[in-house]
Image (spheres, rainbow, N blue to C red):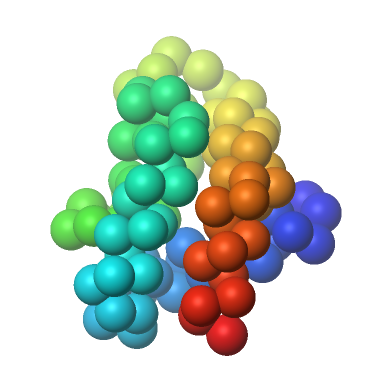
Amino acid sequence: MDALSQELQDFLIRLGKEPNCVSEKIEHYVKHIMHLIYADDETMLQQYYGLFGNDVKPLEDIAKEHSVSTETMRKIIEANVRRMAVSPEWQMVKQLIK
């Protein structure tokens, strides 16, 4: 995972563990950034990171639900995080949370 993706992933992990670590405005922006990916992928990420009221779901469980291997699911998640990390929207939000 490259540095941009890792930065977003670290933020998503923190947001999942500490939902109140950012303002409602930032959370709203993050929800909009997640709309940059397909709805099914958005749901997977919300489950994987435990975002927006979802409990954290193990990668193996998410992979099983989608009938793919754990490694394939990891690649799907990483690709979606990358897609969001390089977006101008995330780059703007990132400046607001620093």
